[in-house]
Image 1 (tube, rainbow, N blue to C red):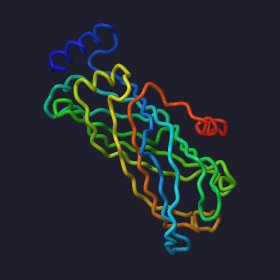
Image 2 (image 1 turned 120 degrees about the vertical axis):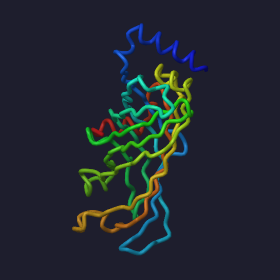
Image 3 (image 1 turned 120 degrees about the horizontal axis):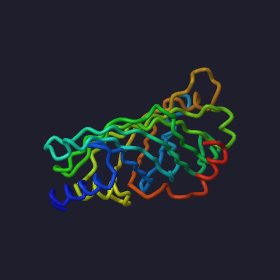
Image 4 (image 1 turned 60 degrees about the horizontal axis):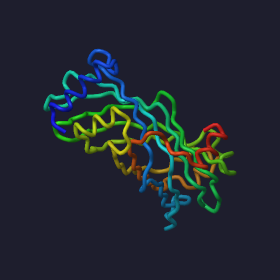
Length: 232
């Protein structure tokens, strides 16, 4: 799509009342795609075991991208604010230090996540610097040991292709117009008071691979229903 074509579409949106002055809030739903998983290399009492465990993830996130259109066509692009509205992710049970975790539920810590996106359609890209502030809960017996869940800040610091045409599709809510993958590496940290299994596996490396693509809605899944029924 040409720049003039994009300008025409933006002007039409403005005249239709979809834009207030030169600012716009764009609701965006991102759905998890393969590969999206969590892999844990178990360390028990400080000793690597060579055991690798983990789970796949389903679900997604709702966010709002707030931007001014004044500098949208500038070579440097425009810095947009990203607000995380909701995170709903889940994964099947897996073995952890000899116990089954039960269904894994990932929910947002309200008001703690968000960030920015440098949108550069002239360069065909968007650079994201966003934090997904989450808590990971388990619905099995382990959940009683970690009733408040495991805080997990997932930084999304990635560059994704985003042309003018993709941007218009994103504004219009068309699926697949934005796709980004992020690999997050961290370690399990126990509370240090021997109150939970987390102290037993303290220091275990965790690698989370997250692939998100714009979608009309977060896809329905039985695991997400289980988490919702449990209040997550």
